[in-house]
Length: 90
Image (cartoon, rainbow, N blue to C red; front, side, top):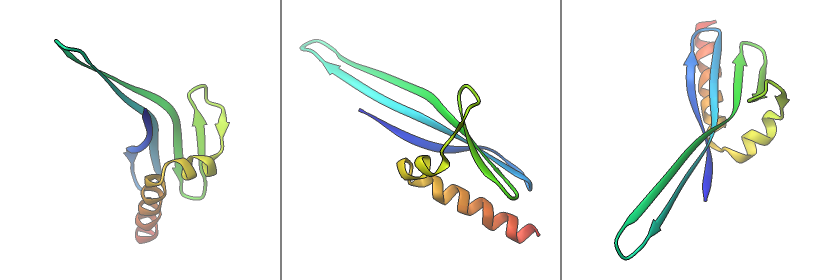
């Protein structure tokens, strides 16, 4: 079973870049061993500029930012924090 997660990868006074990733961890236990498998797969890049927010998949095609916000709750907090910083700088 895996989960989607978002993390800030770059930020300055004009732009915020957020990586959206799919993280998966599996395990298999036998009588002798316990095996762990992990996978981290990039899904999308979100670009937050001063007046626009957009998302791109890994082939640089636009995708729905609203759908990502539904699937990844912490994404709203990251974007809100960036908007607050911008409002303080202006």
